[in-house]
Image 1 (cartoon, rainbow, N blue to C red):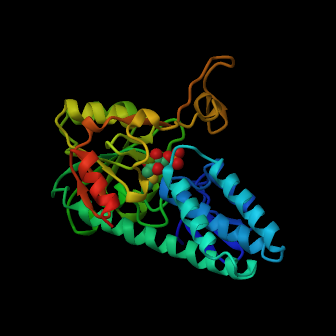
Image 2: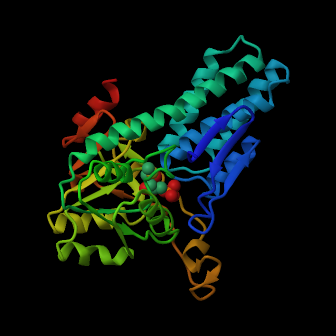
Image 3: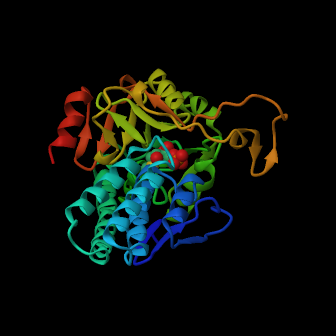
Length: 345
Ligand code: MRU
């Protein structure tokens, strides 16, 4: 199944917390359950979060459809606010909620039942678009991979992080499906291990030759000449190309530059936030210290130690060789070329 499936009165999510041990589906019948799933990382990855929120709003409208109009609209707004409060950094969440609520506003004057019907179709369409967009990103990005290349990726940007196929990992998968001989180095991605748990699982599932490394091995692999390009995803890209992505991405960008290795970001244009001029303006989510002090429930650090747990860092645009979008590959200057893709339709 796809990572996110939206139907009448139901949002089905692959529960990413259980992978690779179990493949379980989380069935959400209320917007509160969808919000919990986003907050607890049952569904994660910027595009998957956005589409899940759209599905959550369609679900809220469905559950509210028998209410009088004024109450219906007030509670739908409250559902949007609840979803907005789940995670702060990935702009796709806010993008998708705005798209759905703008569309809902166009439906005002119709009965709540008709609005609910319209929002279901709209959310399903956003899910379909995500897959189309990912395949376009993959096709553009695969031109950057040569036969025999070693590529490094960080976090999980595959079919799980999106509705299907993926962004940065989608590029690697597409090049592999084209028959290019490549080898994917997968950063484990502490503290939540999206690389070790999810990307490694996807590489095995899709037959992509891959080696899992711990995050602190990446520079060594580059020095050994095993890596010819880096592909990562994004949670928010500002107008100048600065990119917020999973914590540790900035380290990878710096070591790639030191070794003369191209560093590519892959993301849909819905991840670009032109309202922010530069990356220092991005809100970085701080998560539970237990993600650092504990590994799968086992305490690995002494009780009482102070812990920092920023979930994302910002890679300054000067480290980024190109940004692969569904409209093409943007090269510096990003403030001109990325904007053209976002605004150019
Ligand atoms: O905290 P997460 O797991 O939601 O963070 C996800 C990432 O940083 C991904 O690399 C990014 O969202 C791109 S997803 C295609």
